[in-house]
Length: 191
Image (cartoon, rainbow, N blue to C red; front, side, top):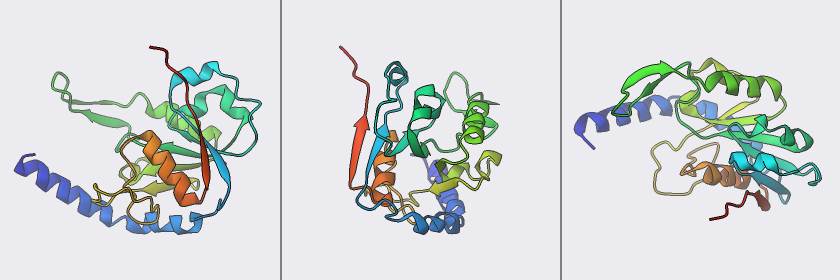
């Protein structure tokens, strides 16, 4: 990584450290589901072909746009996780070499609809999305790694380094909330 990129990353880390009080409010959620079991639903679109309506009404954790699936309406969805940094703004910078420009975020209205429909579901978003107007809601909670890229810390009120992918993030949130068992609902892919 070049010198300029290191400077930019250091500056952004400092900016997000100033937002730490927003993350500290997650202390109230520590172990609130101690000893309980939860479902964690995969983010794959192929899950929409499965009937999940007969599953028990235990707390469920979903990811990103999973709430768009009508099948989720029959479940006890308590938590929604959005995993991407800077993904909830109206405009995004697309750094792909063949694009390299600012463009309209076409997924944002979809996510806004999900947040509006499911006001009773707590949503966890990366703190980098805080300044998006979508993130100023009572049911919104934040997480961030604060430069900790080497551990698997799942401290939602401090350094949350369990961000290597959607499943890692969902499992980290489940651990912090105190769930003792997580049942993963995944779709099978035949190769």
